[in-house]
Image (cartoon, rainbow, N blue to C red; front, side):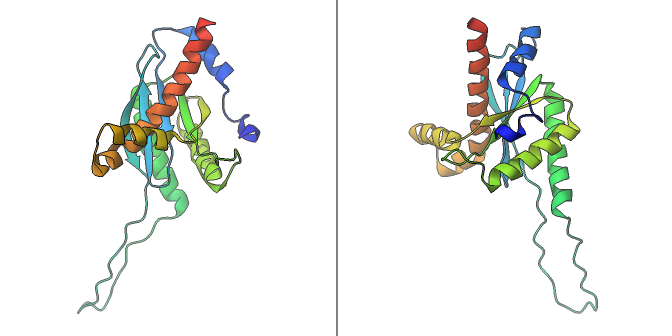
Length: 190
């Protein structure tokens, strides 16, 4: 993650933005995934993070080929991975723009041993594309174990598997975002 810091802001740089206006400290949190992207938001004073929504990563629809009397079976044109990525980025960007955050906390799926695996590269590609669409700084956040921690709480709350699946991504985004919010508030107190 260290080698990508030049494209993104650090916690100290975010803190400088944070101090400017105590009444406008809204942050967005993103829990990136290849299927679902959880989005969370903090309150305007930057104290509490809450789940907001989940965006489905765009994929080509599976097509059933119908063989019949028609002499021409035309399959819909499939989009490229890059087209699907750009469409998904635009979906996420529209939510970000509607919330007017001062910054974005973007969870990076670092391996348990602390190394950057293939998922980190995919997440960084998404984050970089997002930087091209929104005029909002991004801070990278380690999201290791966030989904596991959130799921444990949900199980303890006796949520069904279906209910957990519906909100796990946005709750994970809130969990990681709350960590960033807490760091900023701690810096301010010191």
